[in-house]
Image (tube, rainbow, N blue to C red; front, side, top):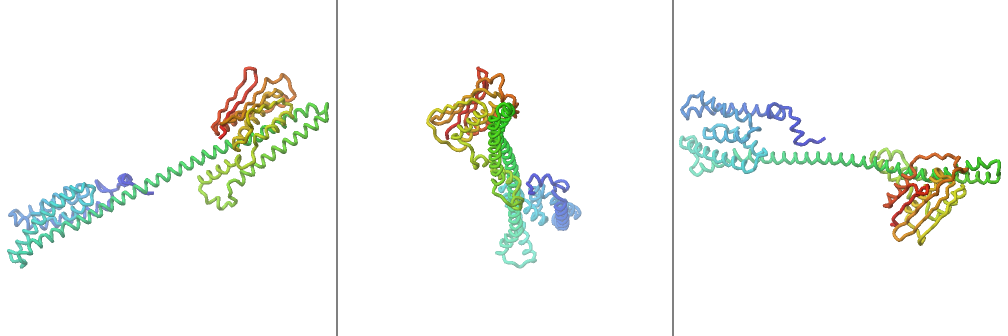
Length: 436
């Protein structure tokens, strides 16, 4: 798990302004060395300034202690080092202060200004010090070497810590940027994974609904006809044996057809994902499995040999054999459509006839199919059912999903679906589906 700057700030474990105890101990150690250095150099300063030695030592110790706050106030540390440069003390504080200042997040113009002030102050002090050493005989360098030595010493005391601080600061900012980028990428990947899981779950739910709708359309119609024929068979078994035999044969045909369609559908569901081995499937992430399963299920209707409009007459003939009076009217030029359009139109008519068997057994039904320029329209309307009919004794159950499934099919193709009772007491189902 990567961390950002905010995470680092939240994970502070050190005292006061230090992020960690390790950095606090480092700064305390540097400040202690700086105090010792400035205290020792304060002896010479007190002698040159004509003040008590103890005052010089105390002054140097207090000035050197400023290094303790270098991380919190680097500007103050550099200003203190510049201020005590004429006293020829605080060299360690100046070096560490310049490094801390350059590595900080302060604007470059401030860093450059303070670094320039520190260099100029150091240059003046070194020039005076080298010249005094020549006058006292401590050094026998020529006059030309005085400015050269002062410049070299000043550059040596200011340039390396400044450049090192700039490098460390740039590297620190780069690492922070990379850390934030990695954290952002991790959050994006997590969000994408969550969205992929949501899409997979949505796809699974959609395909469950679609499969349930297809199963309902395949089974409900034929089973309804089987129940109607079985009820008729029970009614005429003793009075008309020949008709009973005929109805029994129809029941058997309907059952075989229903079983055949169920086998085809289940076969597509079993082999649609194209994966045979369990080892390969175990290596696939959960979201990918969900998406693949949903994609496989979505091919149930497309890959199987679904019904088409040319089979409407056979469908109506089956309802007529069950005792329903059905007439079919076709308008416009008959033509073929895409497979999903023909299947949807067929299923709408099929489910509407199934509903007539369930709720208005024996009612006369009118099926109208209109081929238009850019759309195909269908309507199934039944008249009020008779008071008493043989099929009414079948007491067919209703799950309440037929109309919902029809509407879902039509709307998915961009069509319009309307259903409701008629003024005459019957029921009407209408659908219009775009031809492309």
